[in-house]
Image 1 (cartoon, one colour):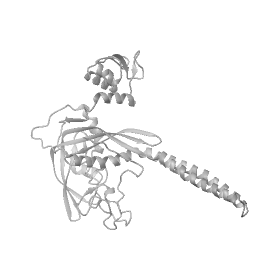
Image 2 (cartoon, rainbow, N blue to C red; image 1 turned 180 degrees about the vertical axis):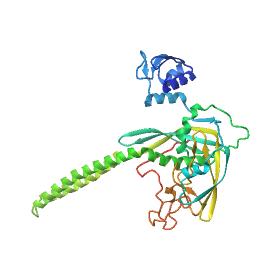
Image 3 (cartoon, one colour; image 1 turned 135 degrees about the vertical axis):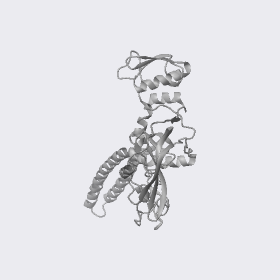
Image 4 (cartoon, helix red, strand yellow; image 1 turned 90 degrees about the horizontal axis):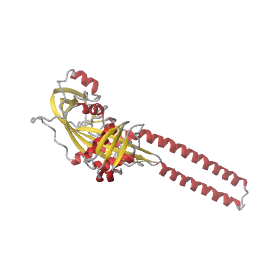
Length: 389
């Protein structure tokens, strides 16, 4: 039984249907009236999920039509799920070498102050996104955050989720010191910044394709209208002064320029890119980790930060970025408040060139006052993250 077939069988049974697997890769379903209306099937039907269908079966795939039918059945159930895992969490060996390999902090130094077992709480978000222009792209975007440290899980998330199906459900011990769930405003703030640049990265190939085709069409448009203007200019030069046809040629040139600008506007509308993102699901994952206490020093300042080693992903999580909630990568420390940020959060000003911290000085450069070009969607893009719960 393939995964889609198993999912459909479980869902139909939960809705009161009698379900019997049949070969090849099919289900025979006896559905109650409410289920018949919800997914538009007769009382007795066969559904097929493979390349070869059972006799008289309807094909079921991941097309939007069947996904919409299943969504009507599920409703709001499963939007927020919680799992508690208790994998083996042995003490971490070779910590210093691990930090040298995993931690990129070129403008500051760090010292390990301690390490020990702890419990944490992750929130893992799933978003469905649509990028719409003259073509359409759809996909699923997933990211997570550690509520104890603020670290994003980009480097560890895939391996962590691969292990979920092999781990048994458990319960946290009574003395587990779990971090509290963040308040709504803080969660929405993290989701807003984290979602935007991840969406940009996800649709970058599609956006680059749009830009290439737009540039190609603009070049063709320019060549065509430029030839028309040159022909009109030659005819005008060949006419003597005082000839009434000169005015007609001048009017023709004006009309060509007007048509060229209108066609450029049409191209801009054709290749404008609108991106929407809709929250699909949140998984709250509770599990033990190895927690590292680290002292970060920059010039005369210092601050204490914490990092978690995840025993399922077998990966050290990245230092949290206070600016854009970036995933893995280099981190820099600002001089004023010792904010730990990605390189974009400490980049040079576009006007005076002076680097400054975007967390300490949001919006504009403290030296020249130039507004900051924060890394968000471009002007012809629009991102609307729906409520993540």
